[in-house]
Length: 492
Image: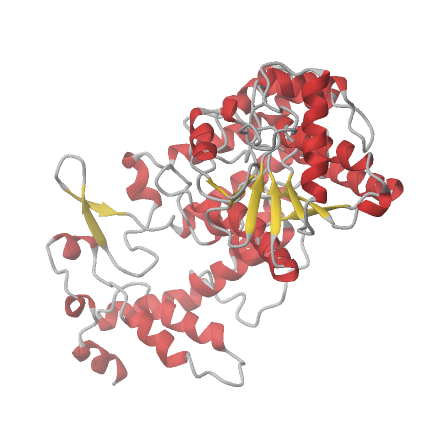
């Protein structure tokens, strides 16, 4: 944070937290709040930096006359549904306390938790659609699970009020990357900066010049004004030897995992040192989660990709690229359905172990609504006519969910064997007839089926060659199509 241009403004930058510098920071927050009518949105992740900003803001506004508290302060937390369980429990309890305390104290704080829509959760994409585990060059999880839910909330408030101010716990001392991001902001005033991706959103970082000791000094000396104390937060950090994963609102935010609290499924980093440290410090019930996470990380091994990944991309094409050795290599597609089924079984087994040995006997590593969505994808996009998911769930958990009845459920072995025989007789690629039938399944019973021909054409245009044929260089679209003569033969 730069020194303000106003001659009489208090000095906020400091090398060590003092009563004077703390008073200056609180005064700055009050003045910024009263400066205009733009509502505030505080990004709260439950970690030390965001907790510090929230406490400072709460204490600053609590000292104002209630008639001056004329604009709302929204507190948003992001639940990716795969947060480390200890952090998730702490966050859920704190959000509830914040809501109750704000109402009791007559303060303008509103706490909201945002989550990815069912179609974009981690498990729906990885186990449902077969997305590979995220890695450095393909962090599909960040956009779907973090950025979209938070930006939707912010954009909704922009649409309602015209402009908003985001309060974030970003600090220069956090990392060289974060310092560079703060340095390169488009400043529009002494303390506000334009958000680089969100129109009409401005960023205010009241602790950007605080050191880590400053943050801990404040948190250990000032209890949360919504109740309780910060001892649980201190214990979490001590056990995990970690930093927090900040609320993600753009792609400049570094990956969590490694030495930070974040998603327990994170495979962008080599090791989850945070979870490893928590286990070493007595949280042994987390071991099944770490084992599963390490299992996901191994799926990027080139030696096993051919066994667990499809040869076609999700676009339906077989594609190649030139690797680091200058050689032609296959761009593998999504996980095979058989491997996804195995992953789901292992995930549910990990859930059973955590329920038996952890603090919450009802914890869910995967939500019921995600299981329903995955089942739908497997049935309608992957040719899972045997409807395998309910069986996997019941086998591992001994329980039955309230599954939606499907007229097509139960079609399995006999029907698929017939289609395989027809495919061989007509010399059609395996799987083609199954996918054509799946188009019919998806549109079955609809009063208007205007899109059926387009979907059938899309299926026929997929790359139905074998890997050997594609490798041999038959790479034109015409080569990939089914010869018309074969289609005629099968129709006879």
